[in-house]
Length: 402
Image (cartoon, rainbow, N blue to C red; front, top):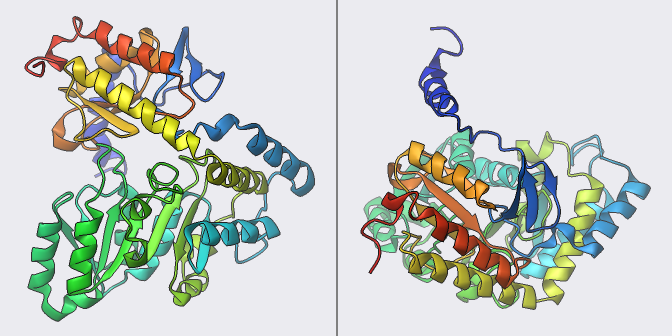
């Protein structure tokens, strides 16, 4: 078999979509006007697929901090954290993250993906056992493959299934690694973290929570689902990213375990990857400060999320199980999904298109992500665009209107 023959089915599927005149791959956003508006080709659009939950990508203080860092520290470190890539600003951010999460220590990575690879892929090695929610992010699955532990999946958001599987393990359950997410990126639903913590308290194990989509979104201080539900003391490691609520790029892990510092000397994705650019670190530090000082951003975010969720539900669309800043709209075949997504752009709204196998249930979906920077008028505009698509795509709402 030739080197690229394994991708033949993928190539055929992609070609079929392109030949139809619709090409959803590698969408080019030609101009960005603000956190919530941009231009795609000839269409000025409301950006409703950015993960920019607090709208901080254009925050003046974050931009100013990044500009000053560029001037004084240059464009990059040109080295890994273990070589020449740890600047004072990297260590200052780690201290600030540890303080924010009320944990002993923090590690900063170049991306959220690498944070999962670097922590999970190092902690979970041969002979270890990982129990993970079936809907966990691809980076978590890749991290497990990197480390080589035994992997057992439990049903999505099913603490009872987790308990059954742990009971079968007997004494081994005391040392398992349990991995869940705060808010899941496809359906926008939250982990039943209280119930999972209850299982952990009774049967043992270590609990890792990826709060990538819930930092800045949930909790009285924005620390995520664990804070929202009052179970932070039972979470051994919190993982996350700077590319959502903090509006930049990078990843982190925080923990109260003193042994976490040893990962700096054992985690290959940490040791052998160039560290984040100083300007990105500077903007994250400024955004973190803003997030802590302005809880009204989170309140506005949730007001927008509830407004959009209700508006789309009232139109008859099939949505995720609960109101959330992540709002999926379930569609049909991949071809219908692509056509719906393209037509939505033509009606002035950009969202994310998700196709199988990334989408659950084998059906396409379009994924809206709400921002605190959206105005109520922009949310209404998004709802109107979905309303205008109902007669064009009647199957999208068929049988769902009460």
